[in-house]
Length: 111
Picture 1 (cartoon, rainbow, N blue to C red):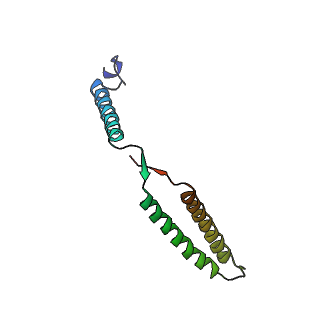
Picture 2: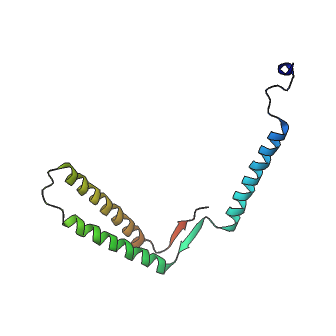
Picture 3: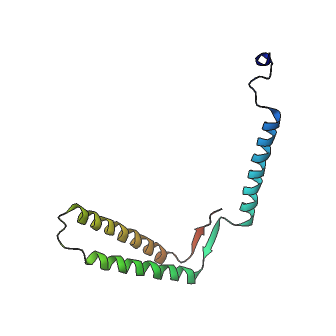
């Protein structure tokens, strides 16, 4: 009877071997990618200035939109819109401040 065999319920050795080979290939691929690209990339000055200019443009557009909001925020959608714009403006201000304070910036690259 098959159930009474001593290797019943165990994973066959050829499947274990294929699993180990697959894991080894995946590990080798990630090591190869890691060796090809460094994890951090220096952000050149012109690219940093371009990014800073874009952030300031976005901030100006959002600020203009914020100033066009009505003074009285009596409804829920108006309140949500105002808080969303304030949050976006604060995030942009933090990003702009970060880029202006640091002249050398390194960006993480995706593997």
